[in-house]
Length: 98
Image (cartoon, rainbow, N blue to C red; front, side, top):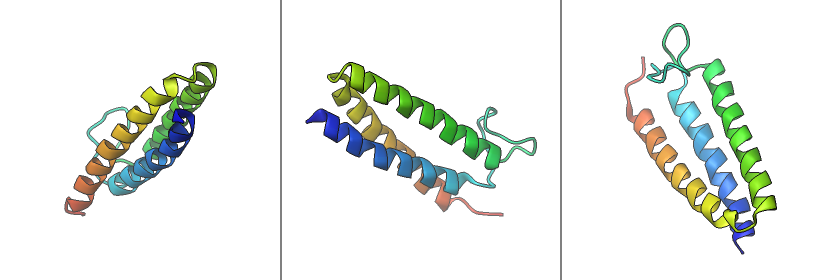
């Protein structure tokens, strides 16, 4: 059942975002929307990142409830995003720290 698979896919998505935030914290941030005035990734960026993710997951939830067939699409998107974000976090952890 794709609805159940979608529900499961949310956990690794949230975990990968947390891992990415942890790997980026205090480091130079290239995204100007997330960079602090010092050009680093900090609490403001973390809050923004999780706020946007929460809003997107809320939209997914509404769409999956209203259009159950969309669960398959969102399941695939969530798993792909989780994999890519985890890869970025691994890369960030390998960078030298100040």
